[in-house]
Length: 268
Image (cartoon, rainbow, N blue to C red; front, side, top):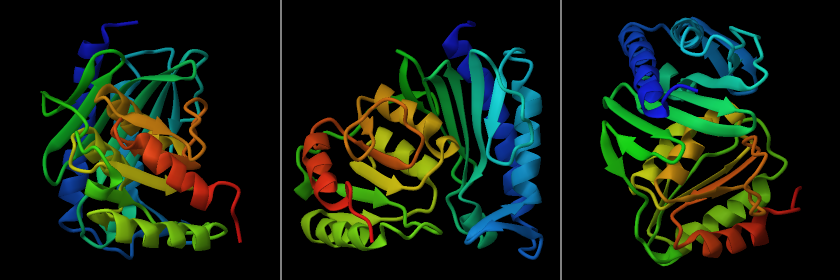
């Protein structure tokens, strides 16, 4: 495997080029040019165009690697290496001209993410991490926050958009956090939420019914920044996005216990 730091530099270039395309298209985008994949689940020619650009740029970096990409532009699967791509995380934001939206790229070796880049073109911020190399924002080292308890935490979440079987316990948890933290935010891009946990802007993030391309890069960025990442039961392996919890190391056990009490094994 090539030097991961150098490889991340190439991934950043690809992410920034796709981000430039997305930002340019956002200036004139007509929301009528939108396809519906499912309930409140949209795709545009911008998503697909960004994904094609990314695949073209990334494919030569590791010729044997496959792709797990949201829009299915490539179905090639690698035996050892696979790129995990969300070409436009926050499509609904994009449709309404709202920031943030992001490009998210992870590289998986076997079952482990070893490199990750999240680029937000509107604010020109690029979050990067590689295995055992730390996490960075525009080249400067970042770390999760030092907030010691939930009472001092700023929380991020995302609301389910088409899977509502856990909505009631989710809303009960939300009410608890509104009352017992410094506030709850919802940006509309899980990749950015995770990046913000990594750099200490948020102290924790939780959501259910995400996909692997939403979390792959952000998961590594959080962990390399000193944070914790698991599902709602505390499992750290085999994560697919169905349950996502990320926080600094100080409040992880506290929030895990609370999330378990509201969300684990509870459905309508």
